[in-house]
Amino acid sequence: MESRLMMSLTQKKNAARKGDAKMAQGYPKSFKNCAVCNYWGGSRQVDTFGQRVTVDSSSAKGKCLLQGGPWKGQDKQASATCNKWQAWGALK
Ligand code: SF4
Image 1 (spheres, rainbow, N blue to C red):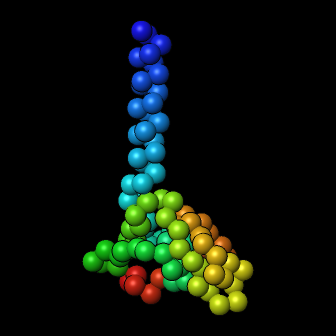
Image 2 (cartoon, helix red, strand yellow):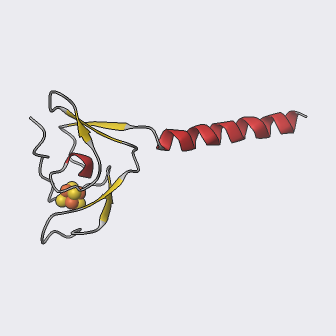
């Protein structure tokens, strides 16, 4: 009985973790990751003040659109980074 209860709690924790991965993720404009980059083609929203970017989840992906860049045309996770980063034009 106790082990069944433990198993149930573990399953609930794992389910909660999986759910967390799908929660919206926000990044301040000071972050230099793909979600905040001008060349990222993923789905994202900017807040009214142009200070924060939100993506559907921390694992959201979008293509890198930088022509001639090392990741051109490849799916990049919102949290990824590279040294070609440029601030998204929607930010103020
Ligand atoms: S890989 Fe680099 S250039 Fe491409 S979207 Fe991400 S930060 Fe921007």
